[in-house]
Amino acid sequence: MQLNYFNRPYFENGAIKKISEVLGAHEIKNPLICSDPGLSSIGMTDKIKNLISNEFSSSFYQETPANPTEKAVIEALKIYKDNECDGVVGFGGGSSMDLAKAVALMANHDGDLINYSVNEGGYGKITETVPMIAVPTTSGTGSEVSVGSLIVMSDGRKLIFASPHLMPNAAICDPELTIGLPPILTAGAGMDALTHCIEAILSPINDPPAEAVGIDGIEKIIKEDALIRACKDGQDKEARWNMMMASTEGAMAFSKGLGAVHSMSHAAGANQELRLHHGTLNAVILPSVLRFNQNYVGDKYSRILRAMGKNQSSDLANEIEKLNEKIGMPGSLAEMGVTIDMIPELITHAMTDPSNITTPRVPDLDEWEKLFLEAIKK
Image (cartoon, rainbow, N blue to C red; front, side, top):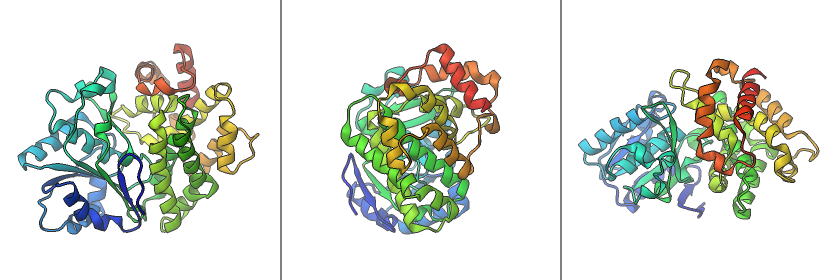
């Protein structure tokens, strides 16, 4: 199946076998493949290495942290330059793909990475990067079809980098790569995809096609039971296919923006001691923000509930909490190690996050505090 949206995703079971074809199509002869230690430990890195034909000379960076850092970008970029690479492949979850985007950016841009962040006014400074291909091995971030990248900087901030030039040139979406993903990672990634769909729909930006894509993603995740099925049976190919499609759709939908869930999640995710999973943070925070936004989004909650196959008069936040419990998500941020004394720093980070641009209701200082307190204590 070929989808056409912003880039070209090769979406089908077994699509990874086309890796050499895709590299050749984008004139990449010496790729740097960015991956993570977890994939290396289970032989996934060896799999892609064996699928790339001998006409290509591949280099590898396999140390991508759970929340990619500026330090990791610098390390990977050195390998890229030392081996005279001419393109980048992000192979893994959102962290590996985000790291690959940053490496592709800095491979032909001068100065420091921070200068190109949205937070520092860098959107317009980004021009065409070196070719980059994304190969997701989880179903959550949708980074393979998005224009954004999240990097934890050396100063501790988790910053957004965004530009049409950061859209991967191609995406190889092979649901079979997610077969056997542990239930807890399946659940966290799946809730990331669901949050993308929901926050995109709630964004006040008027973009009916993107909103329709988000609705379809919600139907696949909840109404068709793909998330629960994938968590229960890691070998369920239909559920894995639907989850990867919903993940891709979530990123397509959030072309119209995200919201306060992501602002809060980015703040908590910047903590390099806790190293918290982004999708799991979204899952825990989402109900609190849904309650906060309830009277500011028109009839959108009823439309989301309909897409979920639920009664339109149901409490959406409660439905998300029930789903979280069913798939084994933490019940609060406190269970993830976030403490009340961290709130002032979290608020400072959340208030400056670009996701606030499209949140339907921007919290004030006291409201940020209440949102974090609720998410920590509940």
